[in-house]
Image (cartoon, rainbow, N blue to C red; front, side):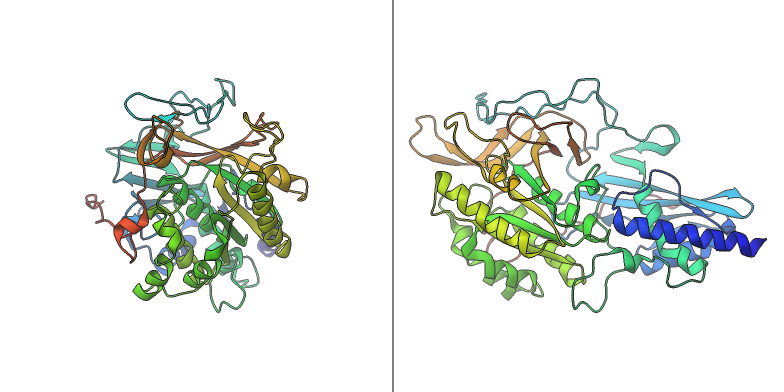
Length: 481
């Protein structure tokens, strides 16, 4: 009887494994181990040891807590640290499961408690001294009663500046990592099989920290699919959102190519850097490009962008299937420029139909609707791409108020004034998410990507020619359990 049950379990594990490779979304139900808790727990310890996540354990209680670790990337702008509390639970005498609580601290600002009133509007203004000219014609994108689904009750707790939430993604990563060993069937799904390993890479990491899961992201990641991110240049948060998205997708099995609105003359330089060891000479070669020294630095050459390139390089260096290309044609303007942007992006997407493409640009280019307030016949890049590709999703940027490094016309409208400016947004909490609507809005956007409170990122060149980022000091450790 027990052998029949084990065979049934293995069949179920095969089904879960296959689904994991086809659907990047984390299941919304518990991962149950078909072994007693006492037999499962040593494999849990081994998993966290192999993942290089040092921990302290409350012996005898089946509870362990990892040490504080910076959330994804070696950048001083990351601003978030986390640890995991892992609790073994007895489902039945012969079955068990894990609850994993992700505790996050911010070194930049206090993490606010989720569950507050949400406002989905993407209306925003930028200005100084009370001047708030509107960037776009804002409109409410969801009725006020719509809310995010946050963990509540025993699944969420808060202390000091920390925020704790149950992490189903991590629970399933551990399950897929250790259950094959427990079942003694190495051909079953494993942590290595889940990642998108780069062609020619000898190995891929057992575990890569990618930050807190971005809600709603993975369902849009499909082979041959394109997601256009219409951003406000010059923030710390958008480059972080991009790097975090790439990390979470490639460690779920989806190869990702990032399209950046940087001059096409930088293609070889960017590619070389991503394939390098990231030493000082590699940074010098990257930063000596004229692009970083533009007399009108509009935010695309920011410190945050430079750190994002470093984070993508780190993922590639681990053997993960990450690529990038640039597609801007700054010598052109108007419709000619949109046509050139489209041709470049289209060429790269069609050349690699097995990959998912995440293309970031200013939020005019990414619209999929024809016309602008000053030119009703204007055809943005997004509008042109949607007619030539099967799967294009355009997301407008949504954010909480803050600052951004922006170039805007001065009061007299005679020249561009570049610097830190206020950015007006709406507070929808501290967690990154993607939200789509039933139909596109009048600009052709299918939804929004939300990046929380925004903070200006200065031009990278102001930090010198080397790596502009440096990891901050770790926060004080909590008392031992």
